[in-house]
Amino acid sequence: MKRFASILAAVALILISHIAFGQRPNVYILATGGTIAGTGASSTGTAYSAGQVAIQTLIDAVPQIQEIAQVRGEQVVNIGSQDMSDEVWLRLAERINELVQDPDIDGIVVTHGTDTMEETALFLDLTVNTPKPIVLTGAMRPSTALSADGPLNLFNAVVVAASPYSRDRGVLVAMNAQVHAASQVVKMHTTSVESFVSPNTGPAGTILNGNVTYYSAQARTPLHFDITGLQTLPKVGIIYSHAGISSDIATAMLSSGYQGIIHAGVGNGNIHKNIFPVLKKARAQGILVVRSSRVPTGPTTLENEVDDEAYQFVASQWLNPQKSRVLLMLALTRTHDWQQIQEYFNSISQYTPAGK
Image (cartoon, rainbow, N blue to C red; front, top):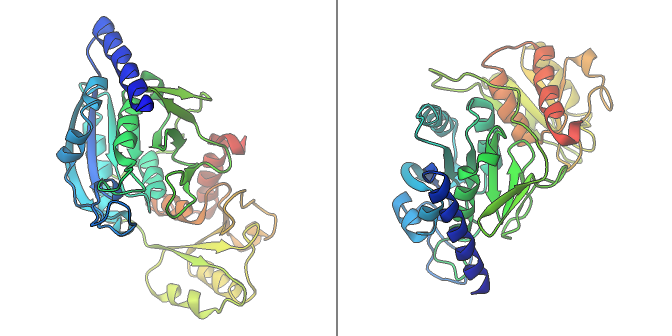
């Protein structure tokens, strides 16, 4: 109760400041489903169905957000994010690119399932070109849980989207009272509300009592891909390496229309001897090969474990396999030059604090 009272007090202060200095910001919410919109038969169990609650119900459940900003919303899809697709990504990015042109909209919140939130965040970071805050949020517990985290996460996401200090920071993720950059954030726990972290850099900021505080002046990514008119994205898959891996796991990709392969290698992107010939053959066929790592922290460095230039492989630098797939798909809409694509990955590394 004390925490709730402190939040209300902060909301009152923010409301007073908005009255004094102008209208409340306009924040538009795009809903895609996920656990935040999930329901379960038990308030204490872990079983639930994602994407059951509509956006207006979510908004109405947290009336305090209307004191932070003037909030409206629309339902884009209502799915569990394990079912996120290229088609939904393109639709979502197109809609955001439309909305940010409206001078009356100051920021956008996207409610999203947590399973693929980090991938969607990076996709939007690379395809939406605006200084306006774009903030993803979700929940680790369904709306019917005894201590659902969705309402406070939604409140905090609106706080972040409404803040002028969130401008020019690219796409952000607001979860568990922390703010993370799209390029850095990773889901690191299967069930905990503390699941989202930026393991290489730490969070970009925190949210407390209705205020967001940032730790650095990090700007948005310098990369932007124009997806206007795109109906599909290039086909890119991930090979997850392990001891004793068999080549037949990878060979199917060579004849299945893949334009790119992400190799989630061991250590610093190391490649098993059974897979190496397949990746060389893929490259000879014109398929782009990116070396990443299954290790959760640290970079996959260029010209270290593998002679990348000799094999025309791309090193993912600070991007994990799933984020490397996002960048490679977008890169392939522009070029098939492996050296240019390496520059795209280098650019992301230079943009992140860990790469400096």
